[in-house]
Structures are given as C-alpha cells and as structure tokens.
Image (cartoon, rainbow, N blue to C red; front, side, top):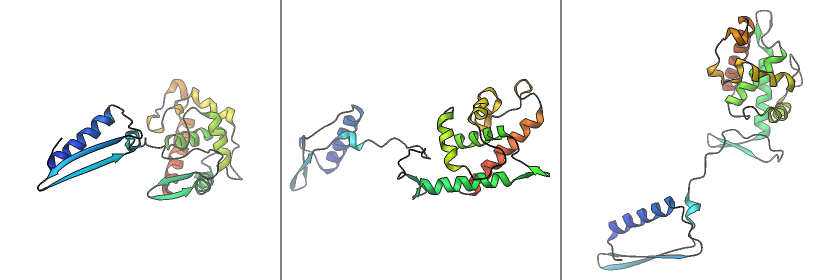
Length: 203
C-alpha cells in the first residue's frame, strides 16, 4: 500500500485502534508498513509487538491493604511511601482521636465507636467493606498501645445491624434502628472527627 505521510499516520492509528478493540495479540510477528514521502520511500518494520501490552493498566486501589510481604509501596502524589510509614501515620491518627474530648469526657468512649473508625477507613479505601476478618488483621497493625476502649471484632460486626453499615455520607438518623438520638450523634461525631484527623495528616 502506498501512502503519503499524513495518510500513513492515519492508517497506522486506525489499524492499532482496530487491533486493540478486537483484543488482537500479535506475538512474534512482523508488520511491514510502506509509505511514500515526496521523493522517497520509507519502510517500517514493527516486530514482536503485543497489543495487549499497550492496553492501559487498570486503576489500582488508592490505598494498599496489608499483604504480609512488607515491601509493597503506596503510590500517590508522585511519591512512594512505604506501608510502614502509612501504618505509623494511621496509628498516630487513632491516637489523636483517642485524645479528643466531648465536654469533660473522651469523645471516643464506647467499644462500638470502633465502628466509626472502621467506616471511615473503608470509605477512604484502606479496607474492604464487610471484610471483618481483613479489618481485624489490619487494625491490629495500626493499633496504638493505649486506647480508650478495647477493640473487638464481635462488636465491630454488629455494624451490619445499624445505620452505620452505609458510607458515612449516607448516614441518616432512623428512630427504628438507632432508637435514641444521643448515641447516634456521638457516633457521627467520632466518625467526622476521625475523618478530619486523617485529612489533616495527609491521608
């Protein structure tokens, strides 16, 4: 096929697009393209091209989950941050949450307030929704030495019977499930403050 420069480029682009749409994998073959420029003939050889390799990689999860390999990295804002550094930052944020006050008492003062921590970490992408075993492993890697109320996986799993099982932005007070307003408002306050602390610390 004889083409000028502009036609050749258009032809090549269309060819590659069609091959990608068709899911074609060209392994170990040669494609020969001949096009004619004014006063010259040019021959291009494209060898060993696998179209699948040119497909964009699927978007990765914004925050990695613990894998136990210890060498994985979190990629964001053009920087590589080790999981250890992220875990340390999360530990610091939970420590700050434990120091928050509501009047003369700690803001975080009930065991079920770990549900608020879980909800925000899930919403932020650090943990998978409804994966209580995974969260149990994760939270133990970022747990401060001192907390206001001990964490319990059994208590956490009770979130599935509450309004807090939905993303934080969808929380709404429901008298049938939350019964009294004060515990609901305190859970909202814990979740909101934890979200703010995470964002204040770049997470």
